[in-house]
Length: 393
Image (cartoon, rainbow, N blue to C red; front, side):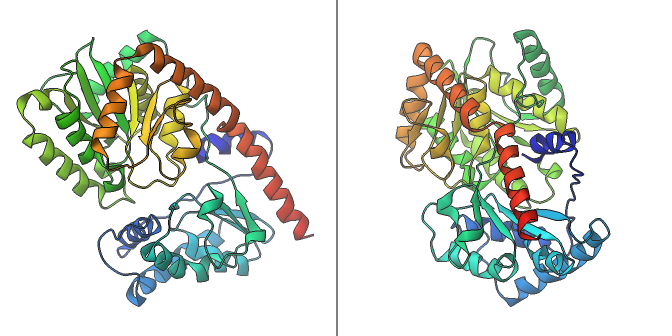
C-alpha cells in the first residue's frame, strides 16, 4: 500500500521517507505472535508476558535511536502495525506528531485478541491519531476522538495492477515457469480452468483447506488450483512461513495422482519486488476464479487487486473482505470460512458459468474504482495531516 501512496505524496511536494525495521533477538518471532493474537489466534501458543515485553522494548529502543537521526521536531510520522508501535512514546518525546496505523483486526475479539491489545496499549495510546481499516477494529481503551477509518487501497498503475495484454501475460507466465519454485507434476494446460489464491504462506489463509476442497469437492478434470505465495526465505518478518509451506507441500504429496496433477504450489522470487508484482498480475489475469479462503483477515487487499482485473472472487465473509465483496453482486462470500463444501460449490459454479463470472468481475472492478484506489486515500491522509498540524498550531 505504501508503494501506491508515497510516489503521489512526493509528487505533491511532501518530503516523504520510508524506514523499515530490522530483526534482532527474536523480534520478528514475537511480532508474528502479536500479529496472530490480534487476529484472535494463539499462534505459537506462547503468552505475551514480561519476557516478551523485554524483547519488544529492547528492539524498540534500538530502532527509536536510529530513527531519531532521520526526523526532526515538528515532523509527522506514521507507524504501521505492531512492529513499530513501541516507537510511539519515543517519537512523541522527540517532538513529532505520531499516527499509528493498524492493518490488523478481528470481527469478534476474544481473550487472545484482547491480550494483544493490553500488551500494545501502553505504547499506542499516546499517539496523536490511530488509523484502522474498519471501525469495528478500534480497541477498547483507545480514544475514539483520535480514531480514523481508512481502508487500504491499490495503485492501478503499479506493476501488480497495470493492464496487461494477452501477449504480455503469456510472456510473464513463461518467466514464472522459469524463475519461480513450483511444486507440480506437470504445467497448467493452456485450456485449463484456473482457480488461484495469492497470499503469504500463512495458516490463517488456509492453503491446506484449499487442497482439501480440490480433493473432495472439485472433480472437474479440467479445473486446476494454483496456490501462489512468496519464496519463504525472502520474507524476513514471517518466521512461520517456511513451516506453513512445508505442511502444504507435505499435504500435496499425499494427494492422489489426479489431484496432484491439478494442483500447483508456486513460490515467487522476492529479490525484485516489481518483478514479483508483475508475476502476481499475470497469474491473476490468467485465472478464471480468484479465491481468498482466509480464516481471519484484517482487510485482504489481494481481493481488491483481483476485482480490479475484473476477476470473479470467492472469499470468506471475514474482516475487510466483506467490505470489498458484495455477495452476489461483486463476488461470492462464504459465510463459514471452514465450510469446504460451500467453498467448493461456489468455485465450481463460477468456473462453469463464464457469463455470470464475467458479470461479477465487471461489477467488482467498478466497486474498486469507486472505493479502493490510491488517490482517494491520499486525500484522506492529507486531511489527517492537516488536522494534526492544525492541532499543533
